[in-house]
Image (cartoon, rainbow, N blue to C red):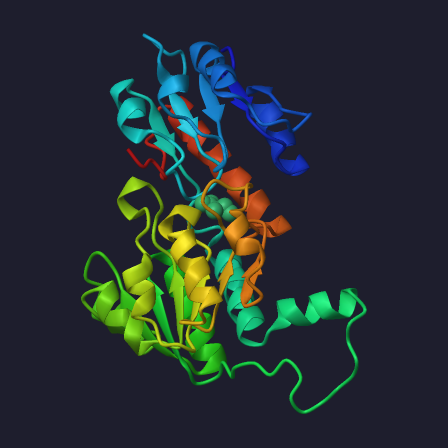
Length: 323
Ligand code: DGY
């Protein structure tokens, strides 16, 4: 039997690429150069499967073709707001993602950001590297205690729940949750969490707010000026979800005028471009989308893609189908 023709759009961990080549007629992107919409259009016309990552935009320009050859987009990543799901579904293309396997590592990174911004670790590191540190003193880079504080979690899916576990069981934090649907009482009970009805209800109650909701047009600017205004003046905002969820201009103003204590971002609207208004905010920690960036998670994500592909091409329903 001929093997399905599979296109991998970026470099993946070597162990995963080796398995892809074993199971499929796989074309790897050894140069790791991102593909253009035209490249995607050509790929969708000739490969049985295309394996995009969360930074590969598959929108109208890539999808304007009458009958794509591609039957499955096996996405490497949990978020799929970079894919125009309506158009893809119209073409009858199956889309899968890679949930579960990156939840712990992404929550670890959200906790890293929370600690960094509360304890001013970014400022301290910049000071040491720039040779500006003049020595220990009682008033130097005094931050905010994390243990025992209140953490608000917006989006209580797998990653949000992992974040709650770390914060509650590791740091004794009180957990407040906002989620589109009602969270089962036993799930809330695992971290002694309380669910509130709306983001507006959650914001004023929290010392820290961590975003774990999906991106996409429906959540664009979910955290806008009026919601930032509801935060306490010493509270911190953490984002490991998607950049578009925050109105970055409004955030920069909240940081500049210190109407909130600080923020820590792993994701940016239009990344890797960083909105210049964010660059000069000292009370802002910024990381380059490292949420799932551990060897363990990135390999597991790749193997999960392979499971989805094998299920699909061997006639089973892929476990992570999202459309
Ligand atoms: C995802 O999978 O959506 C993450 O953002 C990748 O780190």
